[in-house]
Length: 272
Length: 272
Image (tube, rainbow over all chains, first blue to last red; front, top):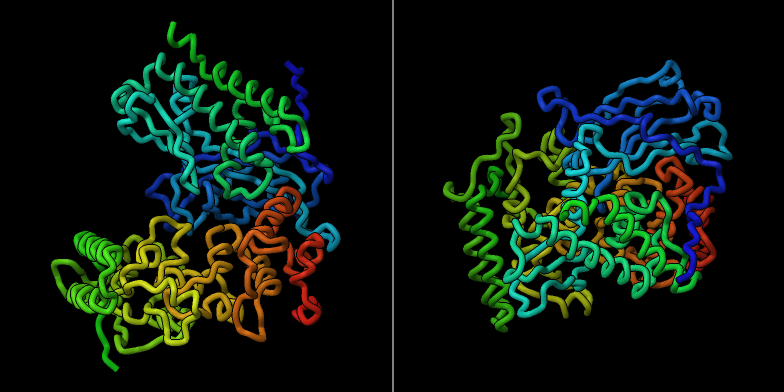
């Protein structure tokens, strides 16, 4: 087996600053205090560590997204955040996906000279509501459920335990044989340990090897969400090898991802 | 002129209408005569409009709204403008208001005859011709991504989102119920259609001013086509905040594959 070479494919020619997630806390807003329809959340932002590389007039922008859904709002200028941590309310009036299922992005965008106008200076991406529970138990249960990416349906598949339906354009569907699985069983540690790694491997193989999906293309593509989720959650941010790389590099990446997924969710320990 | 007070379908009304559409589609599959299907289905649907069992008054901040049920619209733009003159600001700012569930279906039924392909329909449209209530995707808003092809809500919401009247006229230039592929490609991505500079760029690239319609074949998987534009912009999004860039700037940044759509008469100086 080739030695896995963990080289990130996230080129950063513009020296974009990565804002540490701990410097951005996002909380839900009490429903009674909501001003408008749509989504409202509170951002507590601490930019102290980054101020020396930013200009006062640079813009602070919050975005929320889920699959193809998207909304954004401006939170102010960098100078508004110069005195330490500050909490501001972000309103996304035309966005109706629950905050718990959504991801957030905080951007600092150049807003001074014409030559750099619009340049992304700093970014925190894939942020979640801070109040979303994150114990291991809940992380695990989220690992498949998050997938709305991977809806599960039950059907009689004869002697076949499970299949993946690739025919849907927008997403994949996991079809479990109802003679073998039900909602209770599918949450039992043994079933999960036997099922989930195989399903994940199947999906990643389809995306990276059969489809030769690049991983950095259209953000609305279902495959983008899978690669994004796996890279961030179980590969420490390492993206899959580029298409020019050999097949073995891709297989190694998939294997590492499965390993990361199993370790993170303690699949075997939970059965013991 | 014949004014009728606007109502909305109740939950039961929506279900009734849904079943009617299902029956229409099922009869179409059995090669039923379209004229006949239209005759009985239109009659049944119109009966719903004032039936208190299936509809309720529209209660929008105590506004009572009436529309002319004999009014005809040659384009989606005409319908959007007309409805915007009728509805209060609150609804124009947020067409997703919970209070108006069933409104868009009610209006769709009111003007249903106009969703037939017009006498000047293209050969392609004629081939796709089906019964008035046989076009599934234009009567139901399954989620936000589909919403721009709803035959009433789509044009209403787009007109509310895009403030530039000239751009709106082009995007909504088709007859009611007809959605060119280029329009669908742009509208299904919220981050694309809600960004003024991107929409402006797409119009400059793909709109044929001479013919008053989209250039042929731009929505397919071709070099420099609409899908490719969305992919390229998704890549730019890693480095720039696209909402902070002008259409001129985006135009300059496009790779050579888009040159074929950059006609001499569409230079930025002329466009701006």
